[in-house]
Image (cartoon, rainbow, N blue to C red; front, side, top):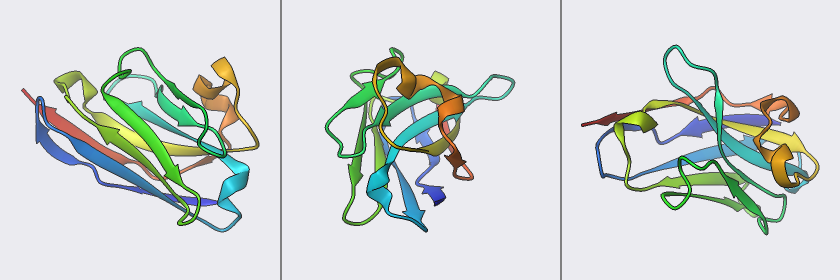
Length: 126
């Protein structure tokens, strides 16, 4: 599967952005999807994940209550709605795909995602 992330940009603290990730190449519904981010000088970290049918979602503590992950299996898309953005949310955001289901803490493990998009930069100014 090929992934293409988009929707990043510059926003003031407290603002919102919606990231999109378009998938192509294989049946989208066989993949669980995740969003990770990487700030300058830091490791790539888990942000959010969603199960194959969208019934289960997972979030890091740092974004819980502010970000919402969703997917549209009809149009092969996964989204990350980001509200109440903070300067510490500044990073390159990547979407990842894992063939098969994700359960519990597995969703946050970078190594289980076999496919990655190219990333989209989000910059939050104070």
